[in-house]
Amino acid sequence: MRLPFKKILAPTDFSEPSYEALDTAVELAQHFGSELHILHVVPPLHVVPVPVNVEVTLYETELRAAAERSMEELIANRIPKDITVFASVVWGDPADEIINYQKEKGIDLIVIATHGRTGWRRWVFGSVTEKVVRQPTCPVLTINMPQE
Image: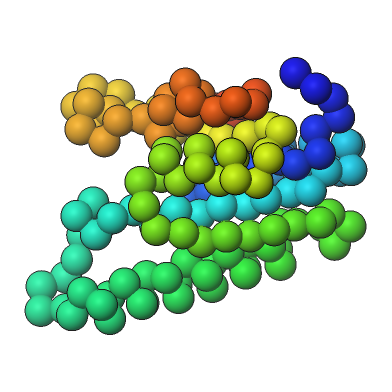
């Protein structure tokens, strides 16, 4: 592990657990003077429920526009102005795209949330975090959402 981290990646699905991880990534970026990379991956349409009688191309366009709006709001509301931030919205398998982004951008640290799926949901959907932890060539910090 090389300190200080120069490039920190915080993948987000715009959920509360991913916001917790993002807040940690922001603190680390401020502490080390790092670039902060925020990545949202839109999963393939066979994973996302598509309403009946909807043109797929139009639906994909709407999904991308909604994700980009959410990313803009996230940056405006959660990222201090003194942090250099890079935001990306991409299509694909979330774990694969996070790993690809890490390699392409030379990310030094990934800060990612765990969602705590158990039972059949974990078996059916798998764990993006688990796949990411097993693959990259950099440290991965997992953040568990506090239980209420």
